[in-house]
Length: 196
Image 1 (tube, rainbow, N blue to C red):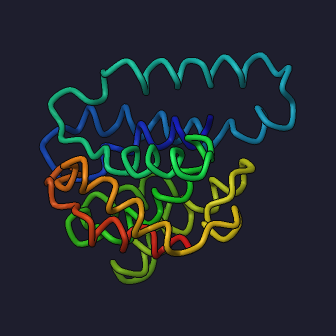
Image 2 (cartoon, rainbow, N blue to C red):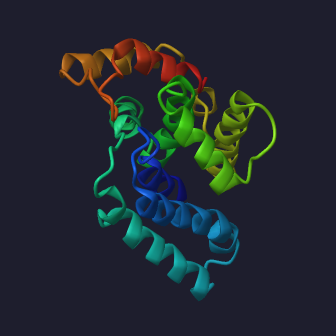
Image 3 (cartoon, one colour):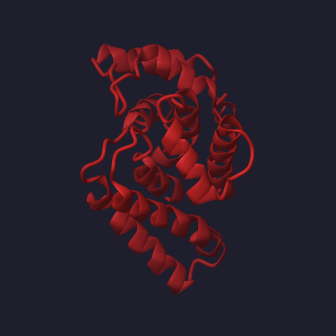
């Protein structure tokens, strides 16, 4: 659940637009998810942690943070295809595809990735590229920390699944994914190559 919520909030990483309130609301949801994850998993009856989780879910999914900002649903589309082929659940496929999406699309998401690293993971040191790498690594570590593996090989999936997924998306005409509509079959394969 954590990485699905995390990704729904993080679909906001994309084109920088003048939307500071939406950014801060989305960031506060992410910060809260990071803060409460351990308590929710280690102490399920913890009412306060579970109530915060429910409130995060409500705000992440009700459309509020999506108003007036571009969104990237490519990870979800890739994830749906992966589920259809492999039977993995949605959270597992997002944990596989999302770090790769950030890595493969880092040029277009550069400014937002830096902001994400600073505001969510408190990453302030190193070159811009190093900070982006650290933010992507922190995201993958978070998913794994809540018990969701983030590499294809951990699910006994072969690298060839990337080509199969890319072809299935292309066959459906879904070859212009992402907030810039610049994620086609080759980029889908690149995204999944980061997760083997």
